[in-house]
Image (spheres, rainbow, N blue to C red):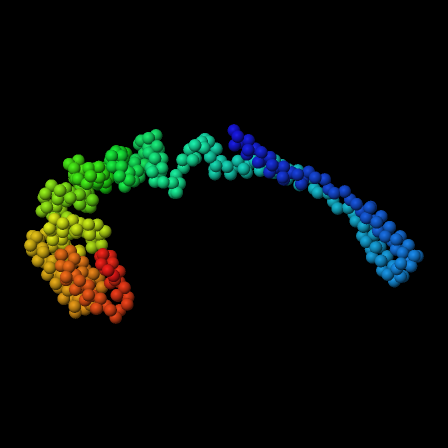
Length: 367
């Protein structure tokens, strides 16, 4: 009600601002007074001439100028300016009284929210702010979800934040609610399994393993689920099975996969021989071979790549693949030698040298 009262006052003020000039009368004419002043000035000139204060030529010139002004004032008095048109005044008043409120209402209803209730001040202070601490924002989301427990989007936003904060039990509950209200998916199952591992102090429990298996049933290429199933095999003492899982991941992974170094390190940890990041065609060809044959094929491909680069060293990407392959195969000396040969090959080309150094930095080497 207070809001509408304020709107009424604002409308009345706007109407008054329009009607005030229209209601004012015209200024009274003062032409008679002006003519009397000019006549007094003529008489004063005559007195000044009689007293010898001004000479005759100056007096005549002053008389001519004052007479001209006196005639103009007399003409203006005979033809006074016409008063403003009464019809126009009335039309303007009607527009002000009716048109302004009508236009205001017509704009407010499509643009405003006439049915929106007042927003309590206490709730306004709880509006999220980018400068608020993360714990405060999490508390606000949790309060919202307490009142709206079926908000699947809210659970999906809250769950990973809780996991990063180390609140694994709450994160597990949030991930389960996200699955319940958003639907099942491989990614959500894998995230739930990871939260279960966090709650168990890094141990892949049977419950977590079951979640990863559900994730792979939904999507066989779910990376997180595959990695943690390999970790479960490693923790159970089944190093060969873990190496097989991680090697299969590397075989299907693109060369620039961000998680490739993690899986390569895990594979080396269990004593496996990872597949180097060569071309996708080469990896596909080696995927179905026995391990001994695969390793022999890979080393043969690496040797052929090294030979080709010694003959034509302009291929920066080739040098980076060679260095990465030696690193994966555990040949640190050959990797250093390939790095030195690569820099020598492109030393005279600043652009290729820059690309090589950037690529080496991405591999974790000094560029």
